[in-house]
Image (cartoon, rainbow, N blue to C red):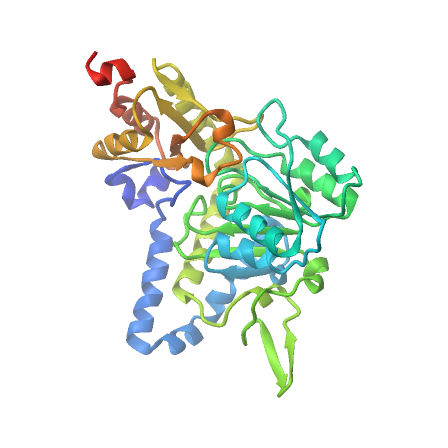
Length: 398
């Protein structure tokens, strides 16, 4: 803990419990990014990139080690949404073909489903939850084998933005493999806090970000594409990074996952992402999961012991994200009160999770998300800074 906090200068200023938004980067990441930006300022952008080519290239095998794939199956892009979009929009859909997803799916993904359904006639089906609030694998298997139209894609968010559950990705991957259906996993909130191995999970496509639990720079993300699926996917747009102009009337798409990249990129961010991945690997993802899971459970226990405070996390397996409400106090007001006490949290609203929060009778949640550099004292700081619960009668003065 001393080393983790020594590497994280931000902990001297705030109790940062908003790691599901953007984690505090370690000094190693910040220093690497700033050093490259200085080289660009002193020598020129192209020249700095040429000089750092080996370090830039090292980010690909680092990500491959992180998620258990080959380096040529990795594309580095601007963010997790762009990674997810590049994979999803590379697929073609016909009328009646089905996209199976979960209630916990993120807003950006569902918007893309609906757009494609509107333009192609594809059908979006939401798989039932089980008794734990996670995707029901039995219902998924039933829908895959129902004969109600070809299942073209199974797409699921591993860890939702609005809660601490961990969806059963390995079991979903097993169903997808048995049925021969591509499986797209949004791992934006899981990579960096949980061990994620694409072969063990059975994911054919996986998107992730740098800024959250990986503790990398903002504006970085990556896409994994299983090599066997590459030739079936044509990116929704191409440039001279993704393809080669071979004749006046012809081009050839790259044979590897970098067909999903653009020529212009943030080289400082790409270097920083590689440093962040190596830094996470140096701690070990099993150790990180054990630490953040224990901290999150401890926070849930502290919150649940308070009158008028309700914890709303679902799932048989839970992670570093903790969501709660305070009776009579809007989530944004709770967040502001905590911020005044130097505690960073976030708010999740129904518009980010319309398939999930409204059906649970929730319009908004306070989201606290821990990382391994957080301490028990910081959890106490959050609990002690919470506003007191109120009731409508008390607030109206009656």
